[in-house]
Amino acid sequence: MNVPAPNCPVPIEQQPLQEYQSLQESCFFRWATLEDRAYLKQGLGLGSIFSLLAAPFAATSFSLTESWSQLMLTLGVAVTGILLLLVLRLYLGWSYVCDHLLREKIFYEETGWYDGQYWTKPSEDLARERLIGTYEVQPILKRLRRSLMFLGMALFIESGLWLWIAPH
Image (cartoon, rainbow, N blue to C red; front, side):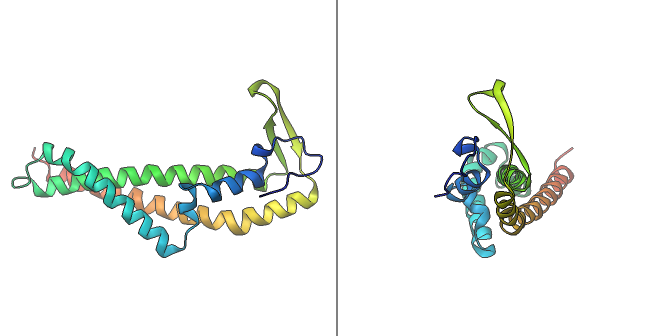
């Protein structure tokens, strides 16, 4: 558990180190911190689950015997699209925390949206948070960007193939 910075007016849940720790402990956001093999295994596992869930819907749209390729591409597009959205959510969450870790001043709200303030981090806190942001969070963001590019290209190719084989 992180100890709140002394003389810090920022509520504990809005302090960058606390936000970072919350993401690390979150079941969903922790996925991005796994080793490469476990990260891919988790993605493939989720893709398999989504395939099973989407299969009945795709099967009602296309006959397995008549349009096997369309059925499979429909499943591929659905699963890739869902995975793309999940990885995008991971990216946005980690990017938000990284931005807070790297900034010298952070914006916080004491009781609501109408009373926001800026707080300048002490140099010791800033140095520690920048180290965490640079060496722990930025590699996660790099991996998530690669995943987004791969999933985006896969979705583009699957969609193009689907349109190409669709009956006109």
